[in-house]
Image 1 (cartoon, one colour):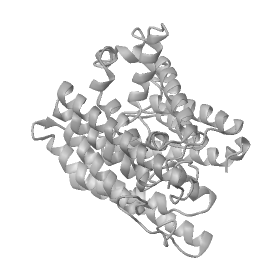
Image 2 (tube, rainbow, N blue to C red; image 1 turned 120 degrees about the vertical axis):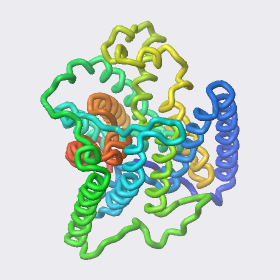
Image 3 (spheres, one colour; image 1 turned 45 degrees about the vertical axis):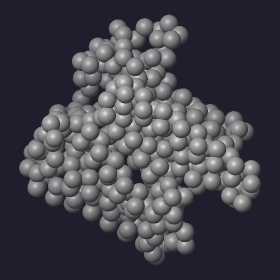
Length: 399
């Protein structure tokens, strides 16, 4: 279930083969140099997290595992294969995460989950994010891997994403203290076994609902978009379920190396703040950057930031995967409607993620994987926003 992407010529085209071989070489050289720099300057752990990001980029690209199209398919066609794959991914994550987080420490690394309040900010921010997904053409991870794979429209969405994140940090104080409830972790409230069982029941309910909806719409259930696809581990594509399970390994690796689950969008806020500083805007007095640890992150190199390093890895991994798949063929002409949708969608994505305690990775994948109820609230609000976004995509000339 990919984000918006364009079809490319057959790899029998000699110029396309040459371009993609060069793409693989460039991606490999940049990745090697980045790893050596991180390892020598910031240590083995930062280098390892970059490698995890590289792997995530390859997985996301080859499995075409996004969230945007998967949710859109449920609304537009009634097919729920992508959403069911997400439920499998989340179920396996909960089974692995819950006991680890309960132990609290592994190999000297303190572990914590992604748990946040259930409040109006989550509802509003997630709704904006869901709407932005469909207009911008991708979620947080989807924007990174499709931009890295050479999709120009997604580079525009990424720019809007960064600007929206910056605006979100500026207005962050006005969303504090809004009505809501304190954080709720199913594992903390019902124990490890109870948290796992309740989570599995919720996954099963969503999975069953998609099956019933698909049968009602089509009379059958399809678990892969194209059952005749010839899969290749090196060149892609991969089965959806393979992508789902591989992303669980990305989550586990991030938890064990960083001490907390995978996140994406905090880096966009950091990048936006640093760019703002370049043009003379001082953000250090903003309340968002006065939080513990935030100001020091702003004053240090982005290569010292775990999320930034992983995001760069995702883009380089997707670039390499695009070359391996013979699909790196950027298109430089975009309709004005698509450009406007990308800018607006990116702004909504960035702003929404900042006020909703994360994105489809930080709030949905990592939050639900940590048995936090805010992840489920985020999912419900984001899906509603995504549904609206799906309906208005034709206004911008999008399919």
